[in-house]
Structures are given as C-alpha cells and as structure tokens.
Image (cartoon, rainbow, N blue to C red; front, top):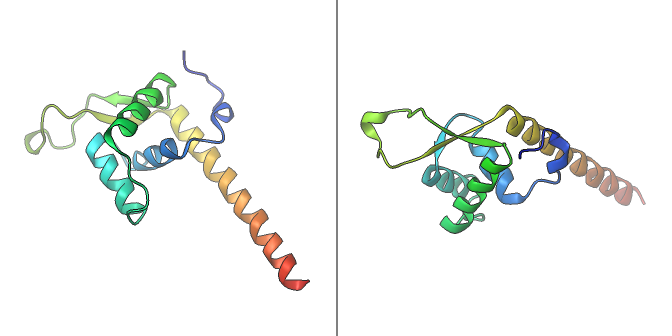
Length: 118
C-alpha cells in the first residue's frame, strides 16, 4: 500500500530521482527514460534494463508513478511499449527531494566560503 507522506521517501534513491525527473515533462516509455538519463548525465548514469524496470515496478508499488493508458503518437509507436507518468505524490516527492538537495548545496557553498575566508 502506497504511503501518503511525501517526506517518508527522502532521501530519494538516485535511480528513482533520475526516473522521476524524466517524467516531469510528460509520459515516457522505459527506453526513452533510459536514454534521457544517459543523455542528461553526459553518459555518467546508465540505467540498465533490470535496474530500470525494477525501479519502475517499485515506483508504481509506492504510488509515485502509474502506467499511463495514453500514447503520445500511437501511429508512430510500438504498441508493446508501456508509458509511465508521475502521480501527484510522485511530483511532491520530487519537489521535496529537489529542495533537500538545494539545501545541501547551500550548506556546502557556505562552508567553502567560510574556509576561503580563513
């Protein structure tokens, strides 16, 4: 049963974070997510199929994403592809994780400034 408390998911697993980012702009299929993560990370993060589809399954179980019944361009698409989309809970969790990471970067920057003054 999915939890309804977004902060219970923090800190978010790295793979989950990358997948949720891919779904911010709209529905996406697994291979598209895999390629988006690879491109966005400059090739540094690769979601292998077992990792990707295991993560997608767990994200669905936790209520952060759902399988979408819509197909952006059915006539140009493979009917076997499954598309995924963020749920409102998934969007909340992603927003909270983004804020958490920004706060960590602010702490790091402040410490660096303090060290530079010393």
